[in-house]
Length: 211
Image 1 (cartoon, helix red, strand yellow):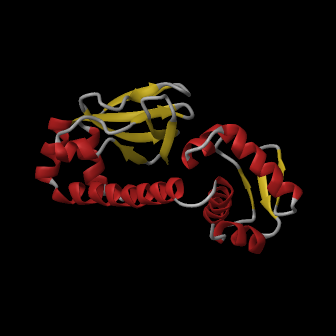
Image 2: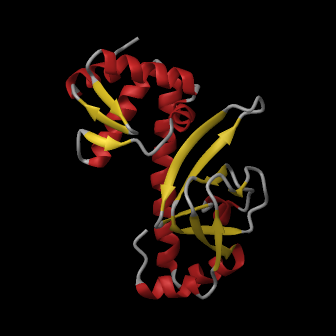
Image 3: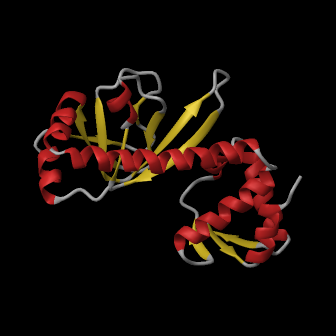
């Protein structure tokens, strides 16, 4: 988020540290917002659940970052559920205290809005992924994006097959089956939670295939 030392100190004075084990819920969709969460350690998953119980992952956020910013500005409930993926340490600041900091230091509000803007772009990508193209096409694009983020053709797959399925709006079995097909076709190599992209051009063609 790029907070200055003075801005960080102003927030620290009002923050309450909370610890969460993997799988533990920080807050649920629809609950009244009682504050914003700044991640000091670990990763969290942001997702929505349909009435039928189907989960769609919106994003994974890793420390240092924040979650639950939107209700601070619109006054509504939490728009999604957030759970810990690892051991998480979060610093919670109440709505009232956060607003006081923003009134004293307007740059803090602008920096939080930049995080909201980035997440909105991610959400547009999620909508596009779920709406357009086959699972195979969307999975190929996801692998290419993960490789770009890692800066190498060989990278650890931090997300489980179930988490990738949630990201793509499908089920775990479909993700596992398509990963296996990519490997048998020589596009990737799988091993011990690691993916190596062997044929980036071929994977790119799969991602760009028009249906």
